[in-house]
Amino acid sequence: MTNDSIPLLRAVGVRKAYGGRPILAGVSLDIRAGERVALTGPSGSGKTTLLNLLGGVDRADSGCIEFEGRDVGGLDGDALAALRRTAFGTVFQFFHLLPTLTAAENVELPLQLNGMPATERARRVAGLLARVGVAHRADALPGEMSGGEMQRVAIARAVAHRPRLLLADEPTGNLDSKNGAIILALLREISDETRTALVLVTHSPEAAAICHREVRLLDGLVCGDGGTGPARSGA
Image 1 (cartoon, helix red, strand yellow):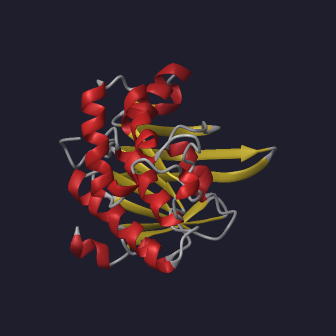
Image 2 (cartoon, rainbow, N blue to C red):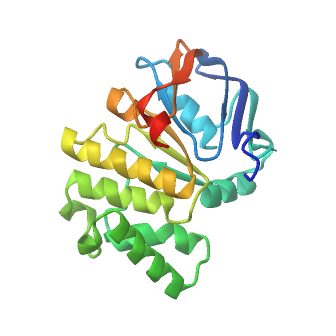
């Protein structure tokens, strides 16, 4: 978005229940291009459910989610899949790399799905693997890599198609503190360089600290929304 006063992503009064049990009870928030937002709160507060709704993985029972002014809930399955394929990137706690593909092939996959020519794919994949520090592991399968290496590859895959929104669900939750710090620095640097908005679900104060805002959830409602401090002066 060229106008920073207009939210990249907006949720208004979002509600979601599973099996009759309310998970989100009317959540509203705005996220702007280049902004990093941490979703925090106790287990069961609705963080991952909200992330899935923001990313179009699931649909809200009521309320509205807009991306660049488009009502995501009003899109049919094909249009929603196209939006997710081109505009959204996702990083998971457990990496979710395809085990039979090499690091390079995992990163290349979203580019193939978007129809990018082979020569351009190869150039972008090589650049991304170098950017995240695993160029030397391009031909390695996930089972041959460490957790930190797999998460670096997962980040490269998530940003390969240059998404405008990056969604991360506990991206350091399966890593030791050293690798976790490396991954957080990488996410922050990529967000700064590309002005990609980042929504980060976390229990970690260190992860929340790379964000401009911390949105705290409790019992399916926003109970706090404010700056985290350090990231604000560094972005």
